[in-house]
Amino acid sequence: MSHRVFPVAVLASLTACAQPLKLAKDDIGGAEGNESYAYHGLLSPERKAGKFRVTDGDNVNGHEVSVGYGFNLTQPGGRELYNEAIGSTGPSYDDVLNGRRPISQTNATALQEHMILKKNAVLNSMLGDTPVRDHQRAALVSMLYQGVTPRAAVDAIKRGEPDDVALR
Image (cartoon, rainbow, N blue to C red; front, side, top):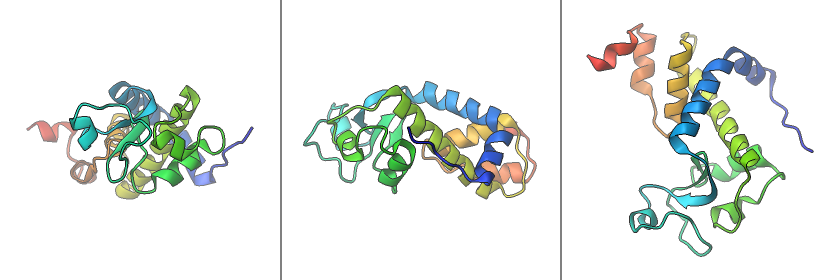
């Protein structure tokens, strides 16, 4: 059995952000669902042609291919992120990417949680010392997980604007 070792700063961030990160995890899980086999992203030519699941031999170069709770295997650094989260406890990155092997529920959860931690670190960098409320952190982490950069929302929070500013 392998154990992940987190730096002290990551553990402190987790402790301080446990509730909002759980909210983000629930939001992402509800929006994405969980697919054990790799699937073609919404904008890929294969998906547009009606093909959902990746099968061995599909063109996966240059197109979004995801697995689990929307973990984008083909994102920059996707292989490294997959290996950081799964390690040797699951199928190889190449087997999953090419549709030869599924991931387990445990692997899907590990990928999701790993990416949430990564996106939370990105958000912390964007926010600097600006405090955010739980629901704001959950929404912003979820946006980052989905591939959206919430720069305008972060800037509004930094200026102290109310949550409903976008609704005006």
